[in-house]
Length: 124
Image (cartoon, rainbow, N blue to C red):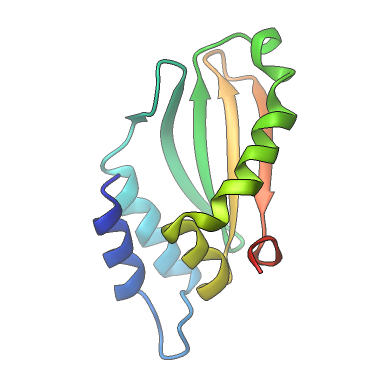
């Protein structure tokens, strides 16, 4: 998704205390989903986003079978935790809006490969 659009959606959704409501998060997700799916590389595709209980969730599909990538999920989790706080839009969700971010990975057959939550305290 266009990062500029994402930032504008977040900024326009802020209340007077610099926080974003569940309804507003859902609107950001709805707007993002209009530009999905987004292919990142030959293996990784972001297919949708959802919002549940103040969690902003990215749903990814990996073009691989379960055996190929289930072993790599701990490495993916480590990489996510190391990089998410340096990404402007994700950091804003975590620190300014007090929303958690969930990264969910399935294979093309719909089998869950891994799911990781990044919380506000990870970016302090």
